[in-house]
Image 1 (tube, rainbow, N blue to C red):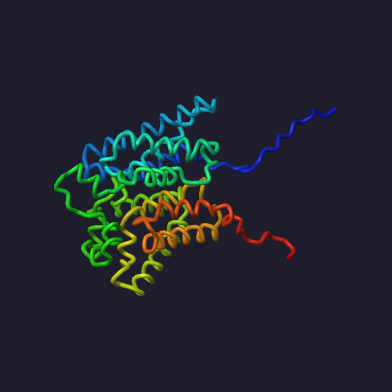
Image 2: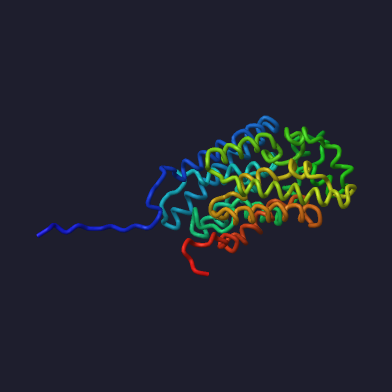
Amino acid sequence: MPEAKKLIVSHAPFIHDGSSIAHRSGQVLLALMPAALAGIFRWGVPALGVIALSVSSAMLWELAFNKVARRPEGIADGNAAVIGLLLALLLPATAPWWLVIAGTFLAVVIGKQIFGGIGANPFNPVAVSLAILAVSWKQFLDFDAMLLTYDPGFVMIEPLTAAKAFGTEAAARFSSLDLLMGRQAGAIGAPFGLWLIVGGLYLVVSGVVRWEIPAAFLATLIVVAAAFHLVDPLRYAGPAFHLLTGYTLIGAFFLATEDSSSPVNFWPMLIYGAAGGLMTILIRNIGAYPDGVIYAVLVINMINPLVDKIRPRALGKVT
């Protein structure tokens, strides 16, 4: 009698390319490192302190929640470290310690773990955290006021705040090269456009991030900003200004592309990215906030499940 064989059927995917969450997290950390180092070089020890506290507290919140919830310890996958570093790069160098710890709690526990952990969060955890911080303690995200505590002689005004209050006359004081190189008031890492572009392109080339979302985000932002500028050049700044200020580049490459809260199909990614760029300019030009990237990311996170249902027609399907 032939010997019975046991057949095991598992769910897809059936072929694994060898990548891991830890590897992807390491790639993102590496891509963020140039902007982080530029921020430390620019703002010194205060920036280093915010980064160190943010990364370490994010990992501790992850460890503590998993202990309480009796889940497997997940800090080895590096995702909490990515959340901590991203949040730090969006905060001013003079952010108080309690704000940093509150921010990492909101990102890791409220933005991620409360939904079931990595892969289950519908919104980008860093965007959730920063939106809550901006509503609750907006004075600590006023970069001009906060940087005065770092240097009483600080006179540079944050570009988006200047443009919102005084129009293109104020925006014209900033050259595109200065903005690209980070010679502007702002967060620890977000102003350093050159290094964010280098890091973002590294993620695209290495396959960690698909090109569709950042390309659609930035292209739509440029087109819509140009349209506003053509309609009223005295009131609305040009596309280069919007591209290189605020959270635009870090939002396009690092926030909007977060795996759990972004689409996976080609056309949905283009629509999703384009919606983010459109919302950013609408909020900046006619909304209440100088920088609309965080809220734009949350809005497109919300429409992601609907957008991602747009699929190519199945082969052999009768219509």
